[in-house]
Image (cartoon, rainbow, N blue to C red; front, top):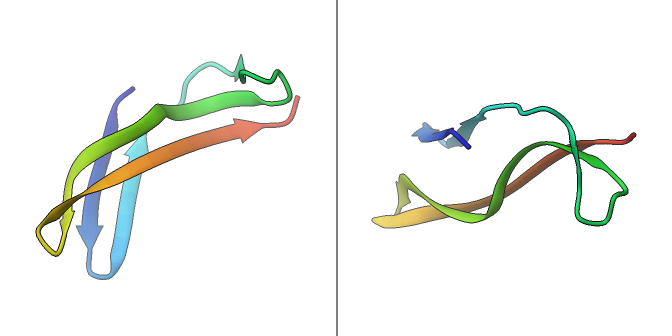
Length: 60
């Protein structure tokens, strides 16, 4: 997973690579991008790192 995170003004901008659709753990959706749990980023708010948990999916 390659993810880039930055803060532009008052927006958190996340860029993550799309992957080949694969079934989710439940099998109800196809995951196309994921952090596979929480990922600590280099982006900071009030001097503290922002943690992101992201799942992007499609319906089969």
